[in-house]
Image: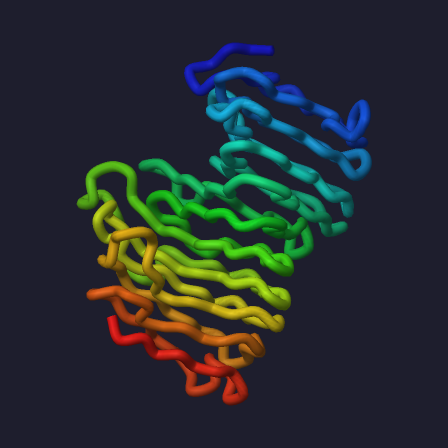
Length: 275
């Protein structure tokens, strides 16, 4: 392992993994109080990685000037973490599909000054993400066009939260700069929430991919005692989610914009909450 200012890394070497490890505990088990970065990760079969420390973050990202590269090749990478999996200057490559499944923990897409996008799906069928349990998908700083499918699995309650960790003046206020462009599936008894945190520099977020499934959508939503939210744009004219559409849930600022009259299907129950 190579110690870095961000924790532990295998350096620029390509790491091949498959399997779930001894007794299904994980092919790679991370126990340290440090971040663990994979710069180049290739799946030779379905695989499981586990981080057990409360401060141990998995990162699919760069080593020095080398961009991160993840190759799924039709396989599933299951991630169990007490914290999060962070996508940071990472490329998802290949044309055989595959899945990164967050079995526990959060998912983070984080950019920095000088980089247009922290995550690139290089081929159209390079892979997808799913959230198996309740958690948060953090969009940190400005992240344009995350072009990858996302599934919220049955029973999960997941929040997409856009924040800006440093000076809010660095944040691009153009709504087009922050968007999920891949298809979004919300399974039965699942809910996807949107929280744009103005108190931390967040402004706008756009869902331009098609939203489907039997679950519900809540935009913009309340988190804890905070009631200050930004704006959410829902763009697809072919959305088909069948659960309840909540909007204005206990917020005192922020709006939801529907680009088409059928961006919310006519058979979907709409619940307008007076905040």
